Amino acid sequence: MNELAFIKSRVKSCTFCDTILIAKDLILIWIKFRDEKMETQTKENQSKLTPQEIKQLLIEGNQRFASGKMMERDLLEQVKVTSVGQYPHTIVLGCIDSRATTEQIFDQGIGDVFNARVAGNIVNEDVLGSLEYACKVAGSKLVMVLGHTKCGAVTSACHGVKLGHISNLLAKINPAIEKAKLNFKDITTPEAVNEVGKENVLNSMKEIRERSPILYALERKGKIKIIGGMYDVQTGLVEFYIGA
Ligand SMILES: [Zn+2]
Image (cartoon, rainbow, N blue to C red; front, side, top):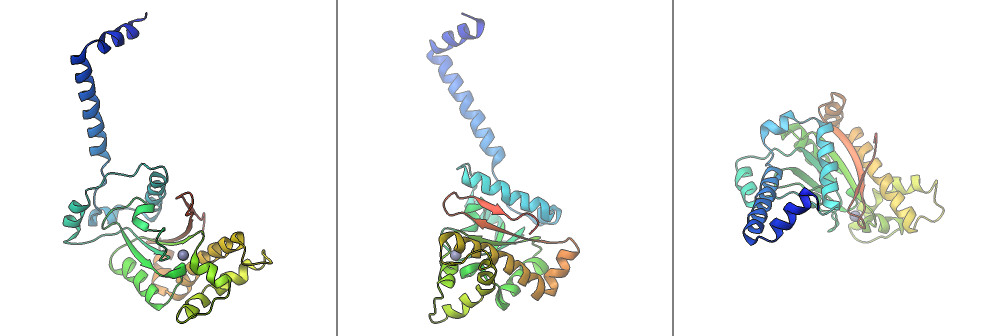
């Protein structure tokens, strides 16, 4: 028996030592969680972060979410801290889908992100106003257009659904359908629908740049970044579009 094995056998035989060791482990775990607890977004933090660093925060947050290792947060404490002001680093233009909830899938807390949510994450005047407010007025530095797989709005658009106010909304997805038709004969298959979803994200990014001189100028100056991605409702992972 080597030295380490001998020590372990002695420690195992002693209840008092076991208790001490368990207590030590618990303290170490507590210290780890205490140190890993996410801080609430402050004005100072918001001004220091670069768009690239913020993108990395979202990538890492999504990895934590998809692996079930989300950060510990005191949400009530964050309510108190943010009650006097909010300094979100990002605005996400996402779908209304109940499975694509920004704070959860990016493991963010209260006061970290603005959300502009509309079926099919399309762009309209009010969405543009919301994005401009977030970036120009409130200091956010990242605009993320987030589509998702199995999107009901995109699927409905691919099937040519016409119904009340939904018709006008779905018409905004048509440019993405036209692009996807170049690669898919049948636009209603699950693969084609997901391709339309991706094209729709890229189209929304293009619309933001074309229709908002404010956001376009901020991006040209490097003060913000407009990015896109697709959330997979089966894996919990977000695919970030490189260079998009
Ligand atoms: Zn959707």
